[in-house]
Image (cartoon, rainbow over the protein chains, first blue to last red):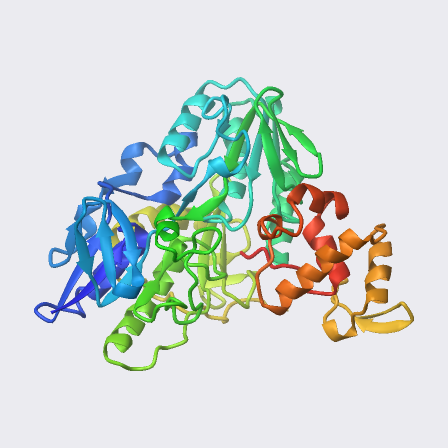
Length: 411
Length: 102
């Protein structure tokens, strides 16, 4: 019997377990998935938690209920991977051998990378919303905050869900309007990028929205430190931005396991072929989701598209067939813009987000790069789709793993 | 797009980055630096040569990586190329603007 081992039972790992258990069956194959955690969190929900739109119950389920019965779930901490010997060593001293390994250990925040970020103001006036604890602490703070300077900040790229901080700024605008205190809150969006987003057409649309919502933007800001005394963030060029509440997206890094195993780059991401999703250094190791270093967005939608292609490539690999170089960096993201509306963007490695209709050319019903209520309904419906369709590895009708150019208005 | 610099016609993109590194030489670099109000010192050149070497080796450039290179720390990188050091320095070095990705 051969062993396929998946590291990480988050969005990416869970989808792979569901895809592969129908393909690689006992007695020929044993599939094992390893994750020390008990809970599976719907991470996009962290965005809504601070504004009391979602409750913790909406976004937390058990890992177990999404893992197929014929896949072995091991809830143990992983000490290291020994890729040259095809072995996983667990923290309790036991080891597992694998024939094929899938790395899906994700990315997480590393506030310790920035001086002063985890100082005495951490979770008092300095918050993150990329963890459950951070989002909850921020919710409690916002519930009775009287107003002042709200600074929404990105430390450095790449980050998970690169549109989330923008959505946070838009939802904050909407939140304070509803509380009739928007005039008491000054919102500033601070980014290391030169504009609101990395791609020109989307940047234009998003900057227009920031302006319309009276959100000030500070670009090209590379943070050096958080000064807890003066409550300012300071960049390497000496620029200072004061805050009463700082909502920051700290540096994101891959799992420290990659460092312990000597398999990661300087941010602990695993060097990966961006078209086949095979590790560049070990041919029986595959990487999907946020754990890889491919130049695609770190987002659940990307992991979903990758999973369809990776399933095929793993079957090809075990049958000694050449891998398909098919992954195109396809990402599909709803961007909440507040007031019950949202934008939708659909793009890949080579095609930036543009206007158009989705998924049906000329019909929609969703509109690309334009605010609409239908897009917002799509975003809310997505939570149901996530729990009931996406994690189970079911194909989402009409949305292909590779990006479609039809219905999109390229200049 | 094309522009004339240091008596040479060079191809640039809409943001002013060279599209063909073979058209770059040190005089072009000097002139591009002047456009950014920077007088190049030997220290600047060490950083520019390092960036060109990394580009040649297809290393994805980021402020973090430059800061950990041992060639220059981030603080000095900012003092050499104020405001947006990576964007300014890569333009002067004649290499593409680093894609800060997605």
